[in-house]
Length: 159
Picture: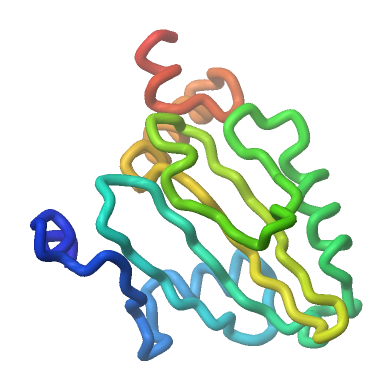
């Protein structure tokens, strides 16, 4: 799939994992404390880096019947003071582009809600090359060494 996007003839954008068996679904369910398996459909586009990860949820299936604002508040409290993870309000135009955080170690989380239908789409935006598995590993090493919370590969190199 990556090779197809590395060529000039690769598709501009595509969804994958439409069999709903993506390898990260079990850990997402576990660490999010979800009682039902989330619907996770990743995508990839014809750009060098940048990623949007979205997880749609029905609010009525969550414990306590929270609103989108409740979920946003929980995330904001959890990541308050964190340098590399920011919780942002959804954009008024309902759009996100994947390359906005390129060349950073930052991660943005948003909760895009439709209260009338009791639905949300949780979205994470990141530079998948800087904040991918290797970047997360370096960040975890920094935490294990007692370095600044949320330190990323770029900061660790200068620590």
